[in-house]
Image (cartoon, rainbow over all chains, first blue to last red; front, side):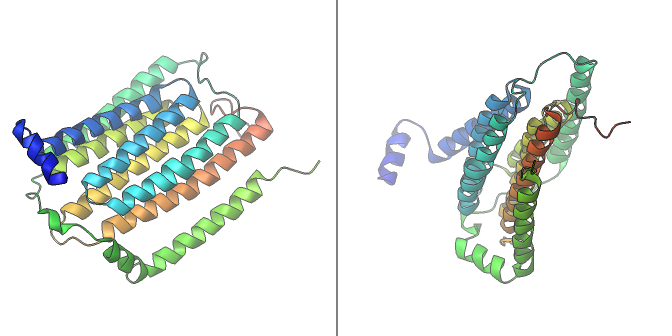
Length: 182
Length: 102
């Protein structure tokens, strides 16, 4: 099936490599676009929906990096759990529209844009100036069993610390969010 | 194949956008969303370096998993604080939350 599809695409002058590349740049561009919508949209509920889209785009970027488990975890935890929390909080609080006059808002936006563009240009310069090694073959991917063994043997202590942090966050959320008795 | 630097550039772009959001958002939930963008940019970098290192092992992906777990915990506590602040001061715009300000 897959080979037949590749053969069919080859007949049209499209190689597998070109399709992989084109789809990656499409997904990366869409992810950056959604991220821009997240920070620029005035309606905070729309921003939450755009953030969910952008997180899905990042999950598919993980697939290009041979990190299938991370992609699944990203969809389950970020898009499934954290975005639900965000949308619930948006609905429980008012101030959905983030407008209204604030003194010096325009200059604040321009200064922030300047600062973040400066950070982006410095990072771009560093990344393009560094001589990265040649691309490795595809069989250098980390397998799921390797990931699990590493998590349970080499990183067993950090794993337990993470579970303690989750417990602390759970209890903290209950304590902070509990309604005060009248 | 796609070169390593293009993944890193995607991470840099998401990081800068997140920084911009943290600076300009007035809504506390919007600031938390921008922080999630920054954490995801860090995750992309971790997994990229894990894939393109000379001796590939699972460490990069493991730390990306830890970052996701910490991000979930911080989002839970942060959103809980937002609800708690809303309950006391009836607003979540950070320029109006000035109870502690002299």
